[in-house]
Image (cartoon, rainbow, N blue to C red; front, side, top):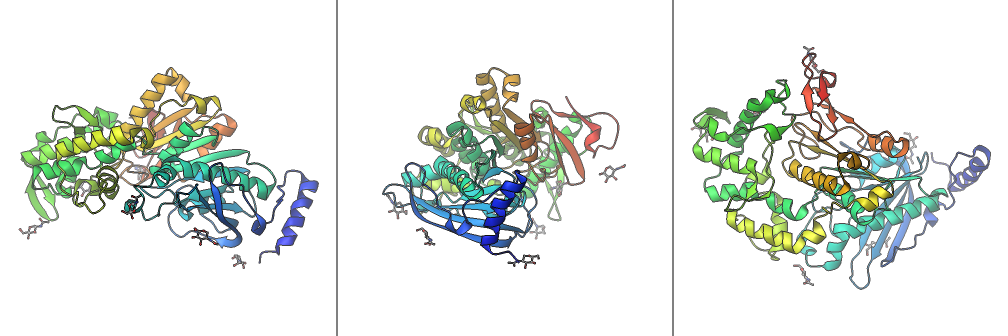
Length: 503
Ligand SMILES: *[C@@H]1O[C@H](CO)[C@@H](O)[C@H](O)[C@H]1NC(C)=O
Ligand SMILES: *[C@@H]1O[C@H](CO)[C@@H](O)[C@H](O)[C@H]1NC(C)=O
Ligand SMILES: *[C@@H]1O[C@H](CO)[C@@H](O)[C@H](O)[C@H]1NC(C)=O
Ligand SMILES: *[C@@H]1O[C@H](CO)[C@@H](O)[C@H](O)[C@H]1NC(C)=O
Ligand SMILES: *[C@@H]1O[C@H](CO)[C@@H](O)[C@H](O)[C@H]1NC(C)=O
Ligand SMILES: *[C@@H]1O[C@H](CO)[C@@H](O)[C@H](O)[C@H]1NC(C)=O
């Protein structure tokens, strides 16, 4: 059983005097209070000790155990906006590692809460999540027209969460966190980049996986495969698209020196689906033939979102990517909602039949109307690099939702502004993983169990990562720091990381 609270407080002050390195708790959990950040006011705060908190199911940022925490739930509002933003700040009762961790969301959910929080506190971090005051189910029809809620979602709420989390950590443990880290993938990755761009003081290290930066472009581009299908009339089945994709992998597999079913640098793959027109493939037990039309659809999806003049508006998907719900009705929900609620401002509209030219217009509208606020692609990271901050990104080459080339587009713009790759390496490193899907999945080696570990080494011990180990699906690879790429060394088991080098 957990000892009564009083004993902890006494033990806290005793260990402080006797052992020096132990962490005292100055305020008992239920008495914790906060000063609302500038511009916000407190609706309520409740702080409760909870024991043996666990998370069932797969986790993302390290293993989840069974931990005792002080769970601080805070609600804030802004002026007369009528918003109520929820913040969950978890403070481990024992074994705080002196670090604060902000955790991010996915899609139109600003936070993942226990999915990320429980593993964070298991590792000893104090950690937080927020819902941005918009619902976690991602129903954008109820908030797209609120300026305050949009601002909360785009950048404000997770900054405020950071301010609250650091303050609560200090009030509870009696000292400020020594280091602070951001953890997030997809929308969570975008949030991390927003912190670096807008609030550079918030984090010492930011892990931004497959970041949904370039939001205004990529979310419209996520409709491109469906627009191509709508344009073509009779949609090509996912199975046929998959069969063409398999042919592309087969064609380009040896470019990196090994027939491992993975393409280390898909940009080098020049596969043209027209080359397999007439080939018979098996789909759902039936034999079917790849037609000109099938090839045209696949090529258009792969080659990216283009206007009538062939100008590239946003990047396509790389060979080896499983085309999923974004390529077939009813489409990818986040992109449907973006177009319907934010661009067309009519939640009851049916947007299932948008064709290519119509989507081009929507993209221009999205960029001009939403790019500045939502884009999160400002390449000027000078304030962040000058305060010593580090950013680590990995991105799957087989990401079906966020084109990996969008991350590289941004990386290049950062490099150009920062004065070269070497300068950029000092604060921002990108790792491109073959056969990895969106924040996980796909046929390739899988994400590290703890993506923060190499970042912590970099921030606290100055050991910048050159490679990061990914394993899963029977294979492992030391993923190279971009622009280096994997090449088979010519001997050894092709499934083993040791048989590959970065060139
Ligand atoms: C927490 O788990 C431990 C070990 O299983 C158990 O002894 C203890 O009673 C649990 N505490 C509570 C409050 O459930
Ligand atoms: C705090 O405020 C929120 C938002 O108004 C509300 O949903 C919640 O029930 C309140 N919690 C408590 C403990 O009063
Ligand atoms: C915003 O949209 C919601 C749902 O469509 C509606 O209830 C609300 O009145 C709208 N608010 C404004 C300020 O237009
Ligand atoms: C494509 O390859 C994958 C992996 O080998 C396989 O599971 C899938 O069935 C293939 N698809 C088709 C249509 O052959
Ligand atoms: C496979 O062929 C059978 C017989 O022609 C047909 O009934 C069935 O719908 C086909 N399945 C698919 C998935 O096309
Ligand atoms: C190569 O490594 C994989 C993964 O470790 C293993 O399953 C496989 O048996 C190895 N193959 C050979 C020929 O040793």
